[in-house]
Amino acid sequence: MFILFIISEITFGCQINGYESGVCSQRVQISDGVEFCNNELDDYVCVPEIRKLWPDHTIENRDKEIRLDFVAYVRDRLVQEINGDVESVLIKDDTCYKAYKQFLCKWNFPPCDAATNLTIPICQSSCTSYYENCGLNLTPCLQYFQKLKPGLDQNC
Image 1 (tube, rainbow, N blue to C red):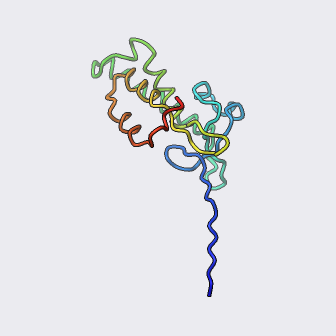
Image 2: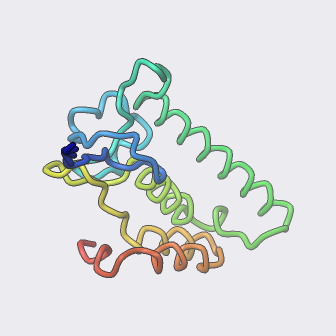
Image 3: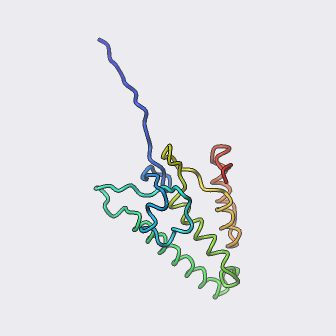
């Protein structure tokens, strides 16, 4: 008895937060649904794939969640700065929250390769810019990029 196994090429979607739950789309095609992050995105980005099983997993909802997270972070950080709990960075200038917004948007709508539908890792500079401008410990950012395969950060 002969058993024939056919191995087909497995195609994965682009990754959002480490899960293959997205599809690579041109930014201009999704710009109406992405109000908060639109100006921070690359030309091709990984966006949630429309699925009947999770009808609320949409581009619009993802963008709203990111905006709410951003507002909550900035609000909490300002309270800490006003109370003197942390070094004042947001009060001094806007580089911290601008870097945070850019990093948050790129992390949640990562760049992708339209030809392969694969995620392109965000640049380490986006991460370090956020951490440095907000006076945070760089260790988590550096540890993440050390785990990447060599050369993945070269397109930055």
